[in-house]
Length: 435
Image (tube, rainbow, N blue to C red):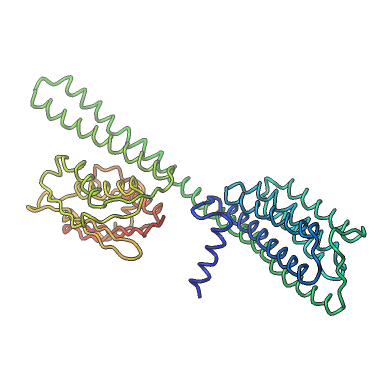
């Protein structure tokens, strides 16, 4: 039942918006769908009335045109929705349904309840346009009121007058009310839904703004320190070299300078990754995971501290995942470089192992090492911005924070298992992304 309902909704969506077409704004999508549904309902009502005319009366070409022309205009409204020109679609829709309501209402008794459609069309003019187009909403609502006055206070009709018995009038009232009530409720529900969604977006944006402000304060403080510290150290080493005539000692200082520059370069790269993750949209492409892991290792394994680390990966060579390549690269680079940086020099055999587990819902990627390990009390804090569990750490304190923030963008998560002196295992979970 759920599947058939979902298929029906998709069919209606594809009919109105067009298969493969996409509307980025949730509000615009909802309004376009409601506008298209109005057009389809109006077309259905016109066809029903035309069939009744054919069965009961002799339909002249003029009367047939009164039904056929609105059908043609309403089909154009759907066509413009499929082209992505939603305002133009409404310019076809609203005048047409107003005229259709006028034609039907003016040919019937006021007691048939057809006036309810004037209320619905005036409401529709405020629902299918957003706030920026409110002037058009007001103009179409005024047009609806004008047609209402013509229909009930001027004795003229393009269609033959329909005379109903009391029972038929009651039946018409029931039919019109049964159509009007769910249609009006649908419009009110859309407005409530959009307001609720906008409220939730505002709450979420406020939370993100508070988070951004807190991070900015910490960012400015820590960045100024972490940028100045290597530069101050470099200046000190340069002064020492200037006053030194010992080549061996100068070479040692040059090596220390190289380390400071590498530390500064890593810090700047972390800042760049952090900025890119916040700014760029989430992309998706098919990625060969084994190849990407090998590319990341190729960029890292030439570092001096990585020379004696054995790297293992049991990721199948044909495994492809649909994800954001640049963000997945950032995650892998930070986790593997962390495993390199905090390896245990006292161990004869040092390793970094990667494992993958795929499920119907996504995949799990494990990065395991036998490095220094992390004490349990630090397991949650290591993902905080600028947090260093080890005072001797040469890292920026941004790496794992960037990993967590990047995973949040991908709707993923990370879990740490670690024992001090034994090693660490970071497990990344990423959901299946669909086209």
